[in-house]
Amino acid sequence: MSRTITIRAFKYNPLIKDSKAQFVEYKLEETSGMTLFIALSQIREKYDADLNFDFVCRAGICGSCGMMVNGRPRLACRTLTKDFPEGVLELMPLPSFKLIKDLSVDTGVWMNGMSKRVESWIHSDHTTDISKLEDKVEPEVAQEVFELDRCIECGICVAACGTKLMRPDFVGAVGLNRVARFYIDSLDKRTDEDYYELVGDDNGVFGCMSLLACEDNCPKNLPLQSKIAYMRRKLVQVK
Image 1: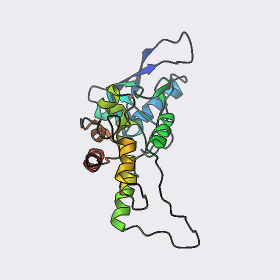
Image 2: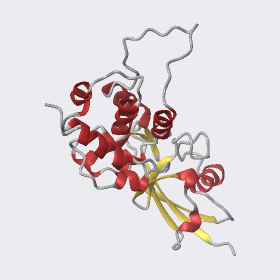
Image 3: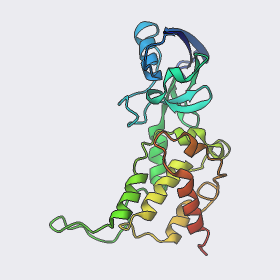
Image 4: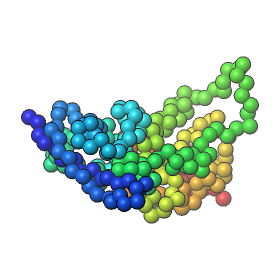
């Protein structure tokens, strides 16, 4: 039996001088298997074409549709409306990122800055010769690297992070996950001292308060806290 659900969406356009931040309420008939993405699409098609939110894949792969749902960061395409017994969903944009409009934020600028900050690329003095076989990587190492590479940079872990709210320059679990990914990779020739220079401070691996919100909310179920702890154990030994 269907029910009526209520979507309370934050609306504000920072580019319009007289725009006022407000919540706008929409009522919809819930359908079987309805996700928040489907609900928002119906709102934009039928009731409010001006409502802004982001999406690309609709399958939890692109990470574009992150938003706060009843105070918790989630992907709209992976959030089922039936999981909210009261039938009320209050939506806000993800914190820590630049607001574009309504529920849309710019995670790209932040992620790009993070990638540059942790030097998110293979460091090696080896010259690649494409006429020869690529360098060997042990299967277990490759599997561990691939596991961390499943991060979709959705910003959920950043939005959930209490440390990030107190330290605006904190690199976040996504950044520390990236560091761990290259630390594990046998093709990367950086030393512990090199990694310490990148993230060996309170805005890096030693700033994390281990509140677990990043791992609790990660839509890809990545082992974020264990990898942060792993990097902390490695870098605390640097003299």
